[in-house]
Length: 74
Image 1 (cartoon, one colour):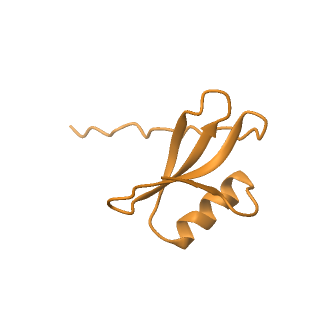
Image 2 (cartoon, rainbow, N blue to C red):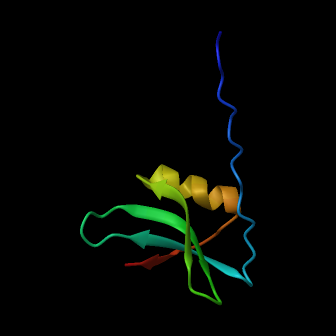
């Protein structure tokens, strides 16, 4: 008998500029970068995607329609 795992649906976070601000959280020690959104009211950061290179960053911007520079949080 063969069992298949049910594919998990990716839940897309709706980007509303009045509620959330795009940001990149960067580790000072390892240099690891994670793109996501910072809640403007609570300042809580929600991770969306690991950024390994410039292509990943461009994909994140394209997916959410972000233009210009993104704030970096250390």
